[in-house]
Amino acid sequence: MVLAQTQLAAGRSAECRRTVVEYGGGEGLPRIGTVLLPGALATLSTAALLEGDLHTAAHWADRAVAEAERGAIGSQLGFAERARAAVLAARGEHAEALLLFSRAADRLRAAGFRVHQAWTLTLGAPLHRAVGRPADAEQWLRQAAALAAETGAKRVRERVRAVRQEAAADHAAPGPDEVLASLTTRERQIAELVRAGSRTRDIATDLFLSPRTVESHLARVYRKLGVASRSALAAALDPEHPRRPG
Image (tube, rainbow, N blue to C red; front, top):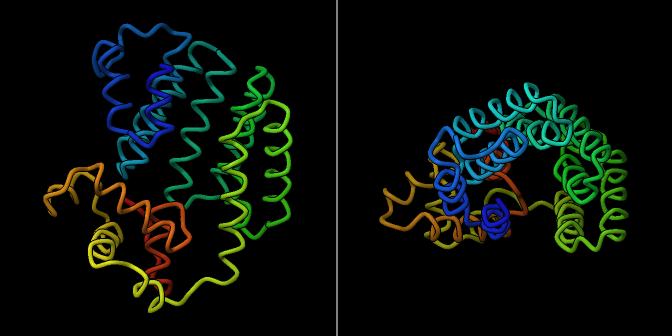
């Protein structure tokens, strides 16, 4: 699981999934005990979400929550609820996602997982702005930054900084023509396929690229457009007709 988490943090979502499934003994993960199973399923959900496979991400997240509730394991339920919240956020269900992010952060705090609590707050903070509560977003980011300072969590500090930069960029977002002009031909091609709802592996097949190459192009598109999700990318390219991932 440590290897899988490291691969996930490095953006190697496909490798992460293979690690969990292989060492878990197959899709059912029969080798993973009850205590760790919800977290493993939550990891699979996050990996699927990074690949744009919302349906699979929702499946793993729902199973993670069910397993955690069955075992009555508070910390594992926190991981599972965080995964489900991320799925809801990707669907554009911001209010419902915020409730789950908040609940997950509380569970992780109670379990003593302060770094995971901080990470959860950084994931949920942008949704406060999405529902018109920027002050609450900054409050969550301040809490996350304080926890990062206490624990030395560099990745959390970087995430806090990135979320704040994204918020600042939103105030001076370029128009659609400027956005498209900033993309290379390949980046625009991939961005348009993402806007149309194509998943990473489908784009890779269509363009004769590896999934990792597609993800690298997509990461550059995100940076240029100042967005952090596929739904936000679609809205940036076509602000009058935003789409939800499906």
